[in-house]
Image 1 (cartoon, each protein chain N blue to C red):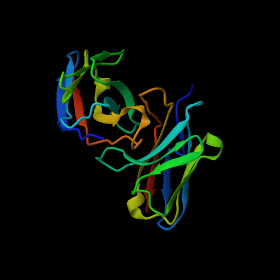
Image 2 (cartoon, rainbow over the protein chains, first blue to last red):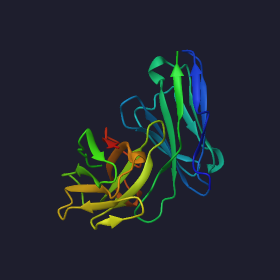
Image 3 (cartoon, each protein chain N blue to C red):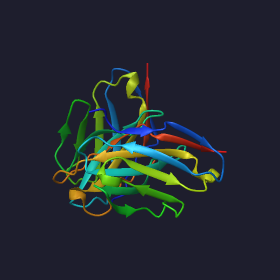
Image 4 (spheres, one colour):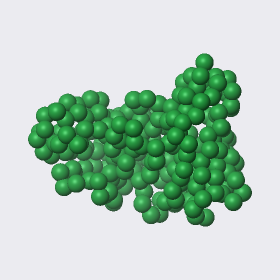
Length: 115
Length: 113
């Protein structure tokens, strides 16, 4: 068990470009989450998957954002036509829903800088 | 999910117990209290959670008041590596309702040598 893995760790892009991030969850975890964190703030929930189904999207997830989790394994988060306001840390977490509790395990994040 | 209130920052001497408070006066009967921490430039790390009984694990202890309106996370022997932002989160059990965690600004705990 190597934990949640995110790639790349850092991404610098120019405004207007598209970027894609990848998250590999802990194996056998059926839930996968994406969060965004800006400087000085706590993480903000974006979306989550149960297996391959995207079950919830935050209003923070604009039309320029799309997430996929094909085959219920790894997930990708794509941002189209990036804006400077998209600069943030993008965090992925995974969990195995058991009973009444759901402990989410986070990756180290991908830091996006839009110039 | 219920709203939580935490002090923005706290100091603690190395080797002493760090006691981090959290108020969640609007907590519902089916909401659990979770604690996570985030060390600089890392993702959040799960620490402990509980419903109404006190809980202890290898990292910390969680004390929940009888009325469940507040809780305290205790790090029994704080080390410099415990310097981090600590988040108290309440969340409905069983995966019901919104599934994402709602983080506030947390408490920045600074362990002094």
